[in-house]
Image 1 (cartoon, rainbow, N blue to C red):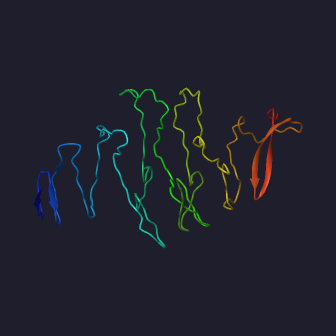
Image 2 (image 1 turned 45 degrees about the vertical axis):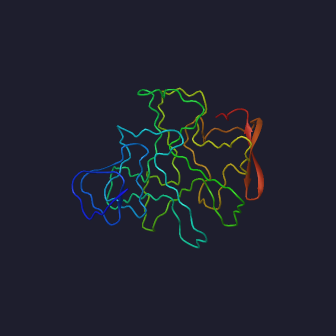
Image 3 (image 1 turned 60 degrees about the horizontal axis):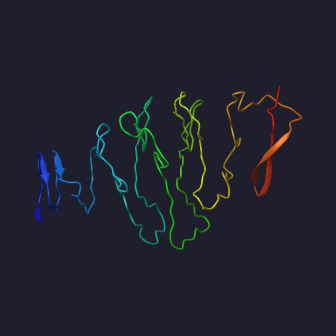
Length: 261
């Protein structure tokens, strides 16, 4: 191991087995390591004033099984009485007018490129743009007031916010960009709720607290799936859906035929 002290360096620099004990400024390129087993360890804070890339869109870095491309692992110290501890914080600040630009805090993609590789057929694995996972081990109690979830989506604003007619503000947006010519013989859902084999059933499929000022559901009247005009007084019941309003269990009766005009 050879130790070097750097104050300022300009130009291209190749590093191997270097320990920097004070500040180092590099204005040119920095290349580290000659093999995939070489590591760069930063014990203090690392600040980047420009973009940092791990691979490029055209030339992605090769990833192998069970080895994450980027790992962020932290252990929360005990008895945090207030505030928020973040494993990873990504913030995209919008402070100027954006008439037609989309701004994403995080874009997580899982792209299947069947034309350029052998990934034309996918088996029983999971292929997901983002996986939010809540895990527990050991003896743990979720006390009253605890909100634990795999994902939490919140919309926040000041009183100066105005949502114009035609604009959409939502906690969650589920958007289908699947081609209209795609062949769908299996399940294709906006939201799919499932459980692992042998796991506990969810108590409720969807629960809403006292948080709605208008309708519970709102659908576009397409005249086929949803219709607000047809009616009949002699529909034959053929099943029901169980719902709970407050603490009372109620049933939505189903008819065996669609109402007619």
